[in-house]
Length: 111
Length: 113
Image 1 (cartoon, rainbow over the protein chains, first blue to last red):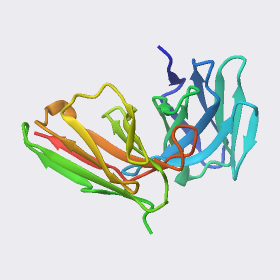
Image 2: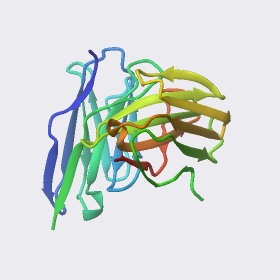
Image 3: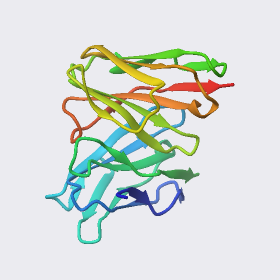
Image 4: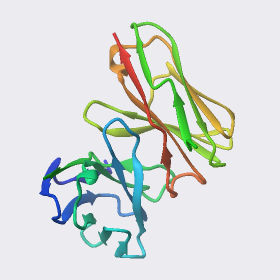
């Protein structure tokens, strides 16, 4: 079936380095993608989104890249900080009215 | 000011009991959701309401019954709780269904013994 998946379950980076979290999706009809951050004991928090008519979108220290050809999107975090430690989820609507979440990547920032 | 709030935060109960989780949003959104997150952090939608009308009902046992008394509230009642119901349940809301940013509550941690 259609699904959203992540390549790496855990990513460890040194403080100050850049982080790249990847996500693959399989639904060609997907036209809206969101990255969420979930800190321990909290609900998912919106980070950044992108629509399928774009291939790049930047926020504060974060950039999302979308490659529709290979159905891949990534989240880049610049100058990773300890506060960035969390589980990151990609999600997409599959062209419909519900969000399908990926399995999540645990980002660990080492001091 | 909490945008999406849930009560209780923690819920420990015995198998076979009936329990309810409440959710309220003060964002003025029209759409609300219930998600279940398992021990592996996998998030899956259960239900969605738009303007108090059910619009998404995933393959969820009929022991789970959502109820939306008004646009700002979406409650979840669970009958005959089972061990496998243990999870974190998140409420969320958005202005419109689906293709909009969803705002999540802090979660309700349910443990069935």
